[in-house]
Image 1 (cartoon, rainbow, N blue to C red):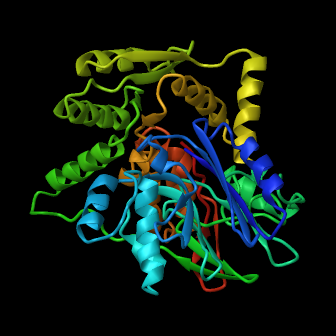
Image 2: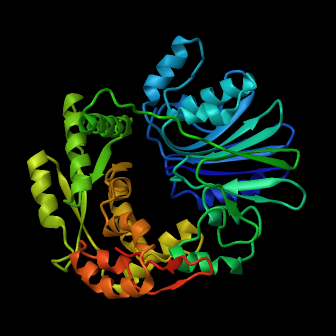
Image 3: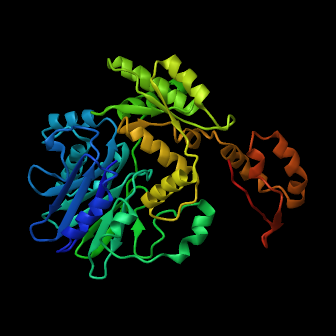
Length: 437
C-alpha cells in the first residue's frame, strides 16, 4: 500500500510533508511531493513499490504533456495487458506501473471531455487516488467500488480541501473535532461506515465515489464497475474457477515477491493452490505462506496449514500470536492509529501483528478474505437467506419454533434468530435478527 496526502491552497507544503511523515509506514520505499507553480495544490505520496521499481514510476506521476499529476495507492488487475493495449492505440504510457495506467486512462477521458467515472469502470482493482488537472485547476479524488483502499478529506472554511489516506495524517494538515453522533453506527457495526469518520470536519469517500473539486465547489459521482468476467458456456463452475484463477494471476503480476496467508481453511487453501500453479507456470517458486499460531488447540490452524504447505511445496512461516499485555497493547495502538476512527473488532490486534511479521519477508500478500462474503459461507448468511420468509411468520409461532429451528441450523446459525416480534399498524410483523459468527 502507499500513502497519499495533499491540500489545495498556498503555503500548505510543510503541513503536507508532516502528513507524509505520519504515513511513512504505508510507503517505506520512496517519498515524493509536488507543488503547483501557482500554489494551487500540494500533492504528496509515500510509496510502497510493487510494480516497476524504475525511476520513471516514482510518484507523483506527471503526464507527458504536463497537464495531469497523479498520486495513486493500490493495484490494477492486468495492468500490463492494459498498458500494452493503450500503447498499441497510440497513447504514451511512460512506465509499466499500474499508477501510470490510471494516469493514462483518466487523462485520456478528461482530454476528451468524457466522464472519468465511466473510464474507471473498466478497471478492476483496489485503489485510491488524487489527480490534479493543471489546465482546469480541478482536483479529482477517487476510491475503488469495493472500498478497500481508504481516502479521507476535509473541506476548509476558505473553500479549500485537504485529503490523506489516514485520519491521523489528515489531522497534520487541518484540525478536527470528535463527532459524538457516530456512536450508534459504531455500536451497530463496530466501526464507522463511510462517509462518517468519527470527526466532524473529516469525511471518507464512499466506496466507488469520485469527487471533483474546483474553485471551492465539489461535485460527486459514483463509479459503476463493468463486468470483468463473462460466462463462456454452460459450465458455470468451470467459468467461475477460471475467473478466480485469473484474479489470482493478476494479483501476482508484480515486480516484488508475493506471499500468501495460509490458514488451512477452504478460502486461503484454494487461493494458495491457484497461486502455486500460476507461479510454476511462470517458472517461479511457490509463494511463501504465513500462518498465525495460537496456544489454544481449538483455535490453532497451524497443523492444517503445515499439511497444506507441504502438499503445495510452499515454505511456511509461523507467526506466534501476541500474548503478553504490552505486546497486545502495542499492536492495538498501531491498528487503531491506522484506522483513525472508532473501531471495535478485536481482530485488529491479530491482523496488525500478522501484517507486521509478513512485511519483514514480502511487501505483497494474498489472502482468502472475502470468500465467505461472496459465497455465503458464514452461518449468518445462511440465516439471512431464510429471513425473508421468517419475518412473515406470526410472532407467537416464531417464539415456539425458534428453539427447534436453531438446533437444525449450522454451527452458530441459531444466534441469527429470535422469536420476539410485534404487529405493526398495517398488520405486518416486525422482527429482529442478531447477527453473529
